[in-house]
Image (spheres, rainbow, N blue to C red):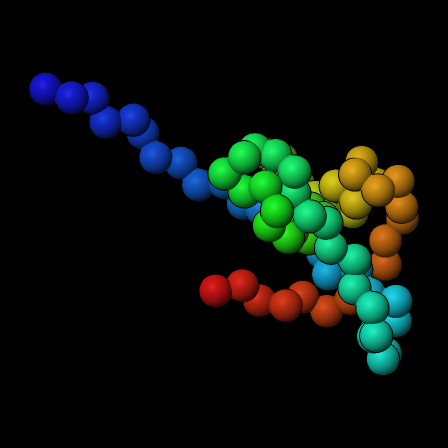
Length: 80
């Protein structure tokens, strides 16, 4: 009999960083270099929500950690 690993849900946040919330013309994205299975694909900055954090708190923390910036969050774009 094979063992089934328990499933768990990870909540992830990401940011579309634009030059202007009122009339955006440029957006910051990064091209992944690793792991090889996703190398060359594009992604928005962000990461996992830690226990006890709201999505907004996690996003601000991730942007500070990854980019060294303080962010002003705009409207949420709902995911699928």
